[in-house]
Length: 283
Ligand code: AMP
Image (cartoon, rainbow, N blue to C red):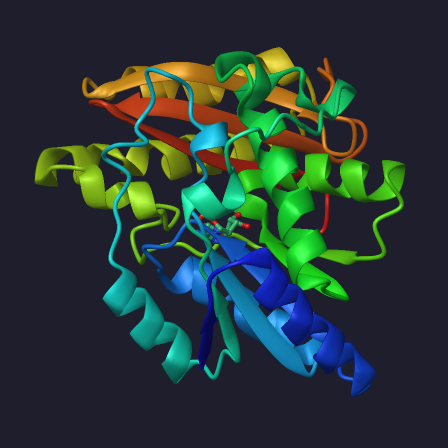
């Protein structure tokens, strides 16, 4: 596995790979890799000849009072796992390489970023789209793979790619969960043992609402009440938001008459976790 640390070197590799008629697949991550991340690689592999994973903890997408400083990191373990998975290139730019002095350009997607995490984390998606645009320009992927765990992020990237004519296929992959239902997340490492147990309330809330949906309930308010019941019963949990939105536009949906996203953001202690379920879709 090659490790490449700056955009010019990454672009030189990408140009050479494309000259040889090889397709490039990219999996962008912030590292501290788990099975959720690693599930994205094979999807990239199926559509590409060369697999690139990027690891970059992007300061631009963290708010001033967020967890940038305590975001978990373990580069050695990450590199080992990627090597074992047969990843060809680890793209590992430093913050200084990514945002040198004088940097002053940002990419903003509007509508789809307004609610949910966009509302709770002002500037977050601007940070995401800016860094992903830079990753696309450095890695020049034919296909880029993202997890549905960050569903609003996936919608936002799709919007950016369509609106700015990026020649990149964007692929979304299902959420990978721990055996007890908790969505895998690097941030789970920051949970104490009681908090880790409490974290189960997110997936249980989703399951409870989904069961009501499957029993015929279509009113968002009633479905959310089911989810809230589970979350409110967990003393270590503080709900940031629990909402049902259209699964394509991320706009509020009063009833679920087309695929909708039930999205949760919940603080467990100091750690903010997100999870979601699509209602009325294929999942
Ligand atoms: P992150 O390192 O948290 O920025 O995540 C990098 C990529 O992995 C994003 O596309 C995430 O949506 C995806 N991802 C993270 N956790 C999971 C999970 N549990 N299941 C599927 N994809 C995930």
